[in-house]
Image 1 (cartoon, helix red, strand yellow):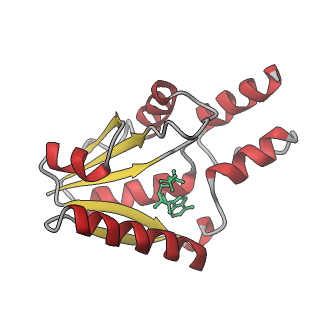
Image 2 (tube, rainbow, N blue to C red; image 1 turned 30 degrees about the horizontal axis):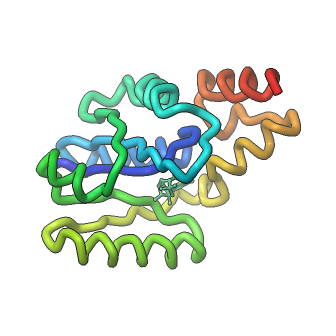
Amino acid sequence: MIAIYPGSFDPITFGHLDIITRGSQLYETVVVVVSTNPNKQPLFDAEVRIQQIRESVAHLSNVEVDSFTGLTVTYARMRKAKVLLRGLRVLSDFEKELQMAHTNKTLAEDIETVFLATSTEYGFLSSSLVKEIAKFGGAIDHLVPQHVARDICQCYAKT
Ligand code: ADP
């Protein structure tokens, strides 16, 4: 069974990687899909985010990385996937995630959203937190893979 793990991944963190790793143990294939949102101004272009994720999951043989502009359920249908994987951290995630799961259910009755609870050590971790710390010169090596930390630091060094 194929599971789609959609998100912004701007950039990928150890929290995302934890969900991907655990998902890859549950499903035959996990496709990480970088969703490109025309209304959001990301730090990294989709191609860069894809590259960052590919390098981070190179050791996981059943994980693929792709990008898509459009509805996640449209992509899922295209891939014949029946599962959308999402991660849950705190209560505030729950409201947004439940609304999205219900919306997707109205669009595609046959596709299920499956939530994995964050591992306790990553409950606080988000892409925006990492960017906030990096912007002010703080250490992020414990939050993102080394090559991603390097990209972020280069990005902020330019500004
Ligand atoms: P989006 O903009 O779609 O929320 P994100 O890249 O922020 O995309 O997150 C993708 C998914 O990963 C979401 O379901 C989010 O809740 C989950 N996620 C993000 N960080 C963590 C974490 N530290 N632990 C578990 N799940 C996480």
